[in-house]
Structures are given as C-alpha cells and as structure tokens.
Image (cartoon, rainbow, N blue to C red; front, side, top):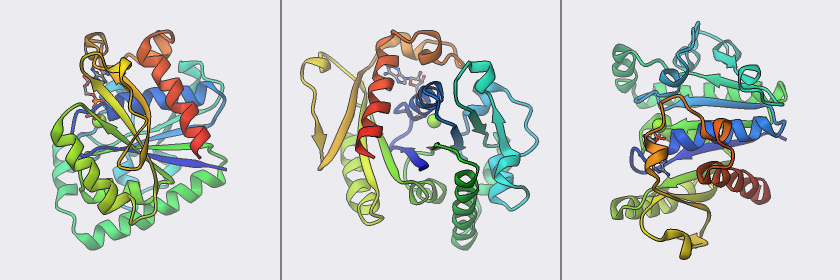
Length: 248
Ligand SMILES: Nc1ncnc2c1ncn2[C@@H]1O[C@H](COP(=O)(O)OP(=O)(O)O)[C@@H](O)[C@H]1O
Ligand SMILES: [Mg+2]
C-alpha cells in the first residue's frame, strides 16, 4: 500500500525541506520506492539542491501539460539507495511563481483533481512512499498537498508564533479533512533532549531535534543521512521514519 505524506508547517524556515529530503533518502535506502515532490511552488528549493536538467516541472503537470511521470528524475543510483528515489521539481523562475500566485480558486480546484490523479498514477506504478514538500501556511497549493496526503507531518520550530498557528492548522484544517497528523519539534533550543514532550494538541510528537549550527551550515546539497548516518539529525530522521511506519 502506498503512503502519502505532506510535510507542512505554519511558518517558513522550520526545516521542512531538510526533513523531507532526508526522510525520502531514509525510505529509499530501506528499499521503499519513494517519490519526493516539491509542492513548495512559491519557494522551490529541491531544484537548487540538485540542479537537474528538467524537461517538465511539477508546475507543468499541475497545468495539464504533461504526465506526472514526465516530471520525475530517479536519483536512486546516484544516492545508492535500494529503492527508487524519484524527485519532481518545482519551477524556480520568478515569472512562473508569479503566474501561479495569480491562479484563482477554480484553477486550484482543478489542480487538486490533477494532483489526485497523479497520485493514483504513482500508486499504479507501485510507488511505496510519496512525500509532498509544501509551502508554509494556507496557500491553495499547500492545502491541496495536505488534502492529497494520508498523513500530515507538521514541522515545528521553537517559537510562540509557530505554536499558536500549528494549533489552528490542526483544528481548522487537518482535523476537518480527517487527516492523520504528527509533529516534529525541530530546532529546539536549550537542553531540549532532557525534557521531551510526547504529544501536543492531541497529536503525537515523532521526534525532538535540537537546533544545531552544523546542520544549518552544511552545504546546500548535502544530505546528512547519506553523508553522516551517525549524526544526531540523521538518527532523528530514522526515528521519524520508524514512528511514521508504526503510526500508519
Ligand atoms: N535542526 C536544525 N538545526 C539547525 N538548523 C537547521 C535544522 N533543521 C534545518 N535547519 C536549517 O534551517 C534552514 C531552513 O531549513 P529548510 O529545510 O529549508 O526549511 P523550510 O523548508 O521549512 O523552509 C536551513 O538552512 C537548514 O539547514
Ligand atoms: Mg522548504
């Protein structure tokens, strides 16, 4: 059975993309055929990590210009993973980002249908895990990714603003959409590992990851779970993967 995850947050810069790519590598390394889709259409970042030669972006798929499989690049061989590791990139051109921001509700409703059809296509091709890396907040494309997922992983950082907005997302969006959800407490300050919370707002906390300068200062395209599997960040990703499998 295919599991579809949306990595979401109320605020930007909480560590969604870092967690999404490392988690995708963790699943693929464990032999799962994995697909990571950059649904952060307003702030694409996967393309800057991989600088791929892209024929079709996920934007082209959502606009009906290609099939979802035309957007995929399999980097499993490069990353030495047992399973396929297929990436779908969002177009970073400013003109395309502005174009998307101008789309209205009815276009977005069509894009949700297209995304659901793309998910079905990936399920038919026996993908085990689909991960949507999303934009923060409640833009249409983020909510579309949440709606198309089985489980929402909320990446939280250690700020009061993040706490109050997360509660609103859970009560106002994930619960009404009947989504399973879980929190990752990322970039926690102080002696956080001595005082780990297990749940918040009725939602399980999968892992608590300290704020570590050496994570922030790594080069843009370094995937820690690949280069340093013993690093605390990498071990936290494995815990998250196992917790997701246990909960699902
Ligand atoms: N646990 C952490 N400790 C320190 N820096 C982190 C941690 N997790 C992520 N970062 C850094 O925070 C920045 C934002 O992360 P990113 O994954 O791009 O967030 P988002 O996708 O939510 O915008 C990046 O520079 C990343 O390296
Ligand atoms: Mg991001």
